[in-house]
Image (cartoon, rainbow, N blue to C red; front, side, top):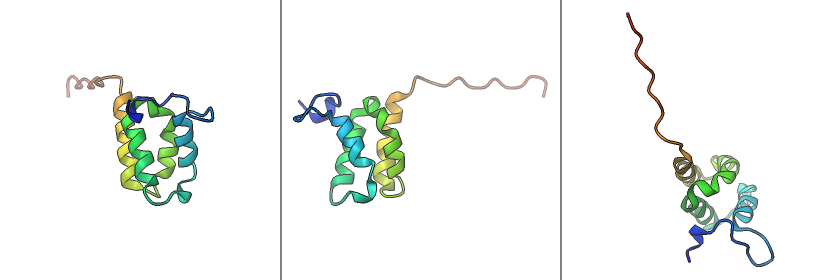
Length: 93
């Protein structure tokens, strides 16, 4: 199974992957190397199930704008309820 499909799986030590990713992203200034890419890519792959991590992704925007923005878009797109109604044109104008 792909790790992208199991954000709520219990990990060794009793933790959950989503909680671990959120905890790590909570300190974006401490991330190094491939961590920003790995964490944001993981959340992007989880889609709507990663919605609880949106605050951490938003906080990471100043540090990793491209990577965090891509993950935010992926998560938010999966959370969309459906098409938004279009406003009706005003009559008589």
